[in-house]
Length: 380
Image (cartoon, rainbow, N blue to C red; front, side, top):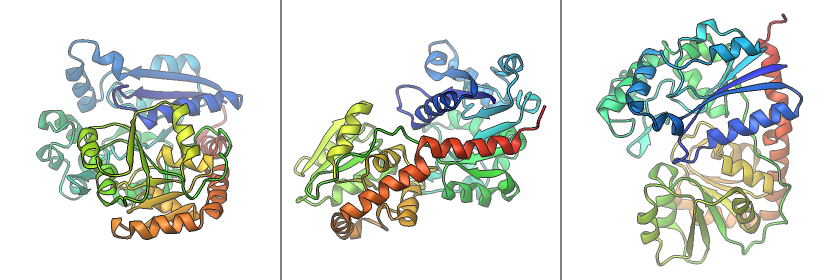
């Protein structure tokens, strides 16, 4: 099959699981024998040119801007898989795309300027209930009304003007919770929504976890990820290793100064793999609903590490469904949740690894995405 992949890469200043997922998927499709053309633009490159912010705002508002169409016409794909167009690609080419479009909805930006349906410490759906201009009032993109205006225009009326939502033959969501969110906001999309989770590379299961090993948090250090609440409630008797960086890094290190918590910052892939192998379990306390099970969770499953999921998010959903650890409602039952993970460590470790193989491996992703491609491809 000839597959064109279109993606606007986010800035390297903010590590992006979406960028990683796209690279992994392109490699997987090529390894499976498909001919793959990656058409991409980079925010890093765009930012080096004068007036980049103004051009990006104009592209988001009008849909006019850089187009992959010439490369697509030359390549003659059977299917075009669109990941992210924001903010470096226009959208005016979409109605004339030379092949059926499959679009992955990595976040909620189709109808939320922030892309997260989260604001000021709580879930927020004001743009769905009261109109997208609410995002301007709340400064939802980059804390700036001016920067938010183009997105408020693009997301008006539940994203009904969004060319991807209008023209894609299939819309890929990354978790049942994400699918339900899109279907609830736009019931007219339901028949085109598919659930195809991202996958992680498989380094093989790590040796069985030790009940005295440290716990591990991997993620951006910001309030929405719940790391502040986790540190506040963390018991002195247990060790926690924190991987990642973000706007709350200094504040969090200060608040954890007298606790058994070690910050290692942003580290490379090999170091994360080693920390997973050395940990007892992953702790995932995100307050966001999350559009997908986090990459850190999938990597933990690959290593055979269970998760302690806190709150109502996509990881907690998967933990509760597949019994890959323990899911608790909030931090009031943190100690009990930790004790339960430790008591069932060997059992949940084995379940975690099986869950990875069945649902989040490269083979599982290729099987599912191939079914989606076949469903939209018109024989020529």
